[in-house]
Length: 94
Ligand SMILES: [Zn+2]
Image (cartoon, rainbow, N blue to C red; front, side, top):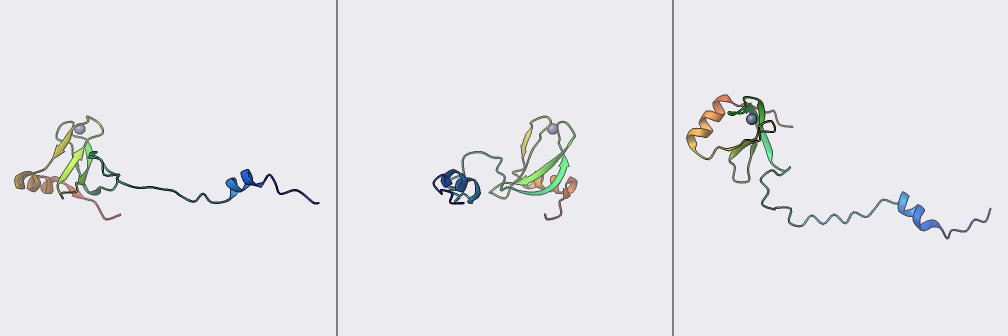
């Protein structure tokens, strides 16, 4: 029963939990759609009238990114935000 433990390296790499070298450096690219964005509600897409999620940008501006018609709408002004709030159904926090 004297097995050699030579060939352990590959086994180990299978078993041993990989030390995660997750280098999350700047994931802050210029991408608008970040997974970290918080969803604040649901509203109808003004273009295709489907339900879309309302997210909040880093600048605390609501925006939607319709997955059906690919419309992207930013609510940058007071009036648009007010109208959005009127229509939007707030999403319960996670
Ligand atoms: Zn749409």
